[in-house]
Length: 121
View 1 (tube, rainbow, N blue to C red):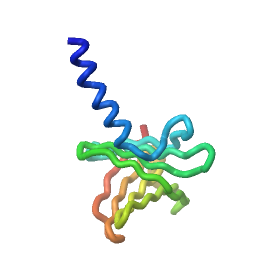
View 2 (tube, one colour):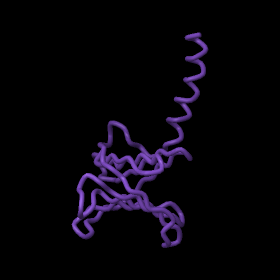
View 3 (cartoon, rainbow, N blue to C red):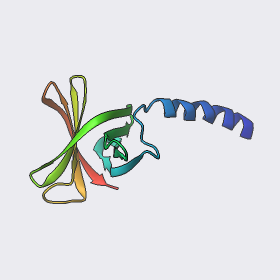
């Protein structure tokens, strides 16, 4: 039983490692960790050497990993922005009302597709 469980788990762990190409390991540190409505878990990482921002999202529909993000302060709240083709992903680090909350926004061709409330974890 233990051998069969190990043989089943090994391909899954290998597949999980290859499904997230942006490098977020010992060369990067996590700067934001949020859990959002709809089962979205968002992590923002920053590469120690280059300063590059990395986006990692897991949700019931799959995983997404992006690099080359930007960061800016908007209305007193930091927002991290990432682009993949015609899609943009914005992660708000807090809100004016509550610094422990946040927002995930997804845009397609500059039109909002989704907005989810988040909580820092």
